[in-house]
Length: 138
Image (cartoon, rainbow, N blue to C red; front, side, top):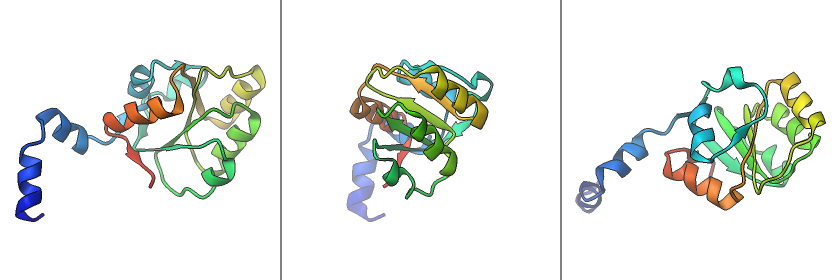
């Protein structure tokens, strides 16, 4: 880090410094941040999340290779669960108040993927999680 960057970092508020270094959140904490409703797999809420990815294009989701990843999407269908299963994604947040049907909940339970509904937009969820220290994929 050069001197100029050091001066910038020195002027950062302490809360932002802590947020920068505290990148991992429990799924339970994430559900509180986004005011989400957990629909299944409540026994897994203590799993850690380090990265988030937002997309409605499942072909883009398949290109991501990160661990401890959650998906933020507005695409509420079984294809989303299948894509998450193939990509080892442990949690999906359905944004924009999308309502998830019983078929999706059953498939998520069967595959061990936590699903949440949130009334927040994809943009707001992404921003809130970034602010909380969750890393973006790119």
